[in-house]
Length: 122
Image 1 (cartoon, rainbow, N blue to C red):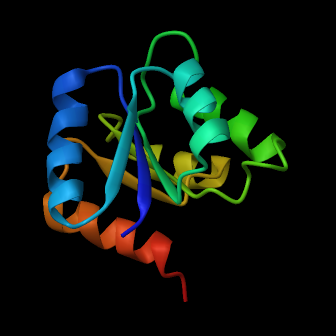
Image 2 (image 1 turned 60 degrees about the vertical axis):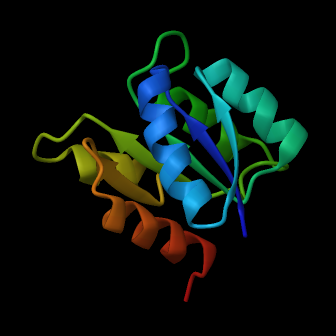
């Protein structure tokens, strides 16, 4: 069981991910925006973060930048879970530092595979 943080401004998206990941045995916390996600990360130190990119206030890229600059948080892998699915978006996300890049609607097999890859890196 791993500690996973789901960050998305839409409650329905968080619920879908939470249901799938809890069923797989993970402990879940949620944040509805970038600022609150940073608070949860500092207090709870999750094993993995699933981050929407397009959010009000701090978007996923801004949160990623802050996490990568923070010595206490930079070890936490962040996977993008986003509606940005145009050609080049995935490459841009990975170059920025997202460990993986999943597009919505998320296929649950791909979600679980991405989580497993990040929790058990080779």
